[in-house]
Length: 175
Image (tube, rainbow, N blue to C red; front, side):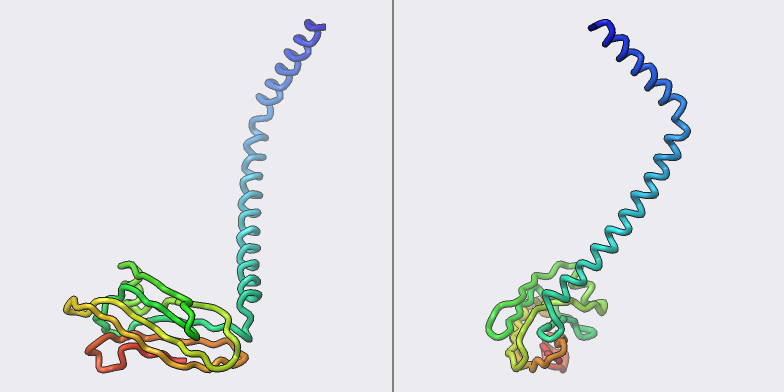
C-alpha cells in the first residue's frame, strides 16, 4: 500500500512537471490577461469609492443645512500665519496650524477649506482668530466676528486675511 502510494505521488509529480513545462507560453499569456483584469478591477473599485464618498458627503451634509468656510490671503499679504481658529455659534469647529508648504500655497493664490458642517437655518455668529507673525517678525493676533444668515440652500463663507498695514480690514468675512 505504501509502495503504491509512493508510485502514485511520483507519477503525479512527473505529470505536473511535464504539464508545467509545456504550458509555460500559455501561462505567460494568462498572467498578462490576469494583470489586465486586475487593473480593470482597480479602476472599477476607485470609481465606486469616489461615488461612495460623494454619496456620503450628500448624506452627512445635506444642502439644506450645509455650510462651508474657506480661507484665503489677500494679494501681497506679508503676514505669516501660524494658526487659525474658527468658532460658529460659540462652538469650536476648526483649528489649523500651518506648515510652510500650506502657507506658500495660500500666498500663491490657493484657497483652503477650513470647515464643512451642518447648521440650521437662521442667524449664526462666526468668529475667526488668527495667530502669526508680521513682516517685521512681531507677534500678531487678530480676532474678527460676523453674524451670517443661513437660508435653505448651501452657505459658502469666505475669510480673507490681509494682515496689518495693508490698508484693508485685517480679517474679512464675506458671505
